[in-house]
Image 1: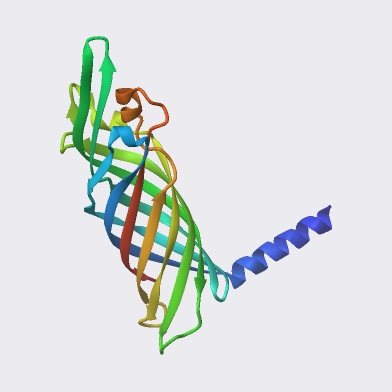
Image 2: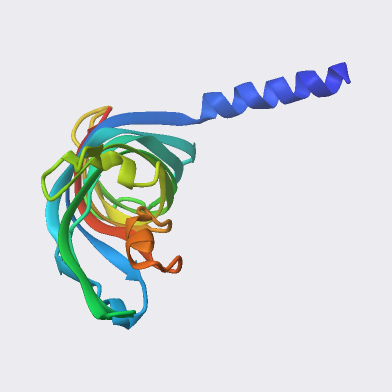
Length: 222
């Protein structure tokens, strides 16, 4: 048992010595919108996508020359302008429930992904491809530019956690011995329902509202 423990420690120290960690800063102008899971009778529509911003730190942990685990901590704003219209029959005739909401939800995100790097495609330049996911926690929200609606905070309307799938790619440019600039394009596809409000309003538990966004990522690594 003691020999096995020593072997595991030796391998762990060896792996750490071989590995390389690159830490950096990132800014991400992001076009965001929403997707719906709902029957056509509710007439949900994504009226417009919105330009928002994300910022954060990243860490690429290289376990081989061209492969790295990537994580970090990002602050990102999501949401869009949506509308709905539903006419239902009542005991006295019919009523129409309709509205248009400009939704903004801000999240702290912890992404976990795999990055695959090419060899140099030009002097000092390499390409990378990224796939993974992200667990996000809401930190602020507003609807139609209001943080409080009918005496209740808008943030309470949204679910605490959100999960994303991440798919992207880009290029890195060596600017010095340990400094790199990068630019990339990343698609974030929301996997979880962010809001139970419309389920309660329209009386249908099958309604779902999810985020979708595309970000242009700029950053520097050290």
